[in-house]
Image (cartoon, rainbow, N blue to C red; front, top):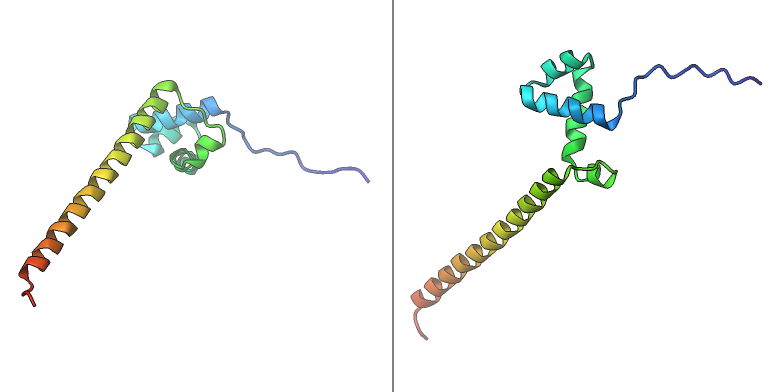
Length: 108
């Protein structure tokens, strides 16, 4: 039997084109305008934006330029530090409340 599959007419976009489309959408502040300029469906850019925001994108080989990678490391370190500071403040508030409750209870 002969293989009579239809040819795949879907357009494929390389990583460079995707990166340029995302950059253009970010610069123009309008995904719709960027899609019109590149003659592609705006949904496609929205999908690429969503994929770029997930941590899975890095695992799939979406290479970041060194400046972006450095900024990402700095932001993650800042987020960890702020989470630690928040935990310390929560514990301090809880401790102060506990001392207040203990000092207000009458001795037996």
